Image (cartoon, rainbow, N blue to C red; front, side, top):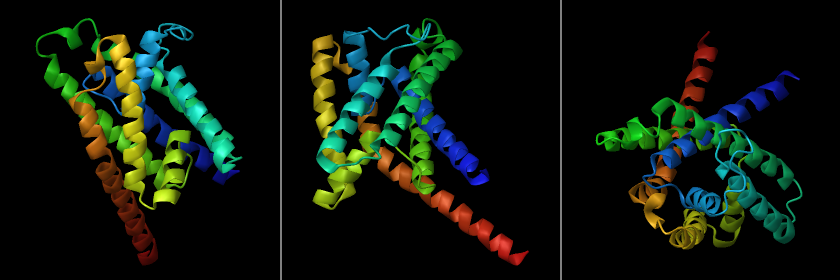
Length: 230
């Protein structure tokens, strides 16, 4: 029971960092990752989920929908019958994302602080904190061998065919960037969530994840050495 509680706690910690990181980047409107940009535009074009949870955006629900569609595809084509666990993770992340977006809006007052002439530096700072939180969350889940979203599982599945993980990420991110761009054009503001920081996320997320995994691994090794010396 203790191990199960610890696993659950670690899963929650990873999802909290990841979700609050993603929502920070989306909140700044400097450019989100392709899948997050796609869900943003989907929600703006079809805002039927706004307000399901009072005063909260419906983008988290669209994130759940996109991941569920991916999960169904994985179930059909790769017979991943345990994919329902990843769907539960995506539901949790979608809800936490909404909470994070709501929290940032309340803290920074989007109609006040974020709209004044000096807000750019503040937005850049929030976005950089966001990508670090996002990277740490992914690294923590990977390090603890816990569950990611169906999108993460799809990247692993594609890697089996092309043998290189970074290529599978490029293919998937490129595909969702096309989807996000089409939705952004329909929305008539393609640069609302596709911008400079989209490139930062695409280029920097992988290296940051590796850095945090190395840090977590080194800390574990250091603790093991200290225990041996006691």
